[in-house]
Length: 279
Image 1: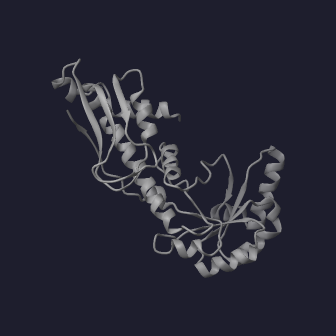
Image 2: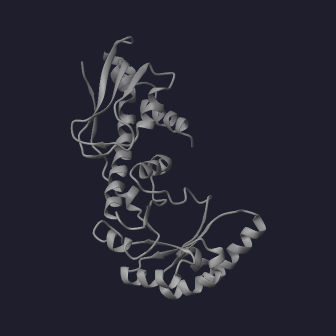
Image 3: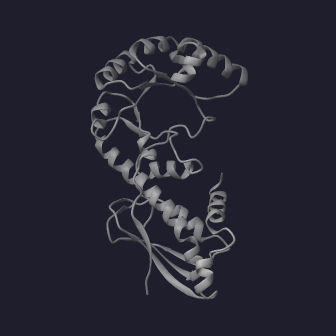
């Protein structure tokens, strides 16, 4: 879904056959001003979305950006000013707030987690644990906050997780079938294989030439350090599972290349923003 399609469907969902609150009491040609007021502290995200929304031809709204994506923001800051048709301002108010509050919450949390990893050589990744149809915006927010994106969907990389391995019969069976699939299909896709213990890592390593990265799932920091040493750079390494703000730095210091956190997108508190009229 393109950004334009997302905006169209979101407006249709909210407006239906009309914004009757505004139609009832606001003159058709009335014009007003509003500002996006920051009521929280963190990282701003969603300005690109706001620009796309207010530039649509059906709205008579002029946007004046005062801050850009990635800006550090504090209570009382103003992200942008808008001026134009009052009905249009009211019609788009909830959509711009919903998206920017969500994106700024993700960017702010990602930024805080990334700071905990400062001084390590580990990269913070998101996952596919995103809100349906909001994945592109949520992953953009992760990037704005200083994280990086894992695969976008099921189509742009192969990840053999525990269920794939169990259904295939074994790690070896899953990897060998994957190698054959890529040869037969001619597809050039990176392969990530999940390991649940060091014994499974040992089963993966004979196929290191075909495996871009090993996902070390639910390892303790001690187990992770041992596994990273055993792999010894022959493939990339990634840690996931049970990692949070309290232990993130300990995991990052094990030498693992990547840490993926579903919490970057699936348990984030929305940022506090408000669209307020001003003279």
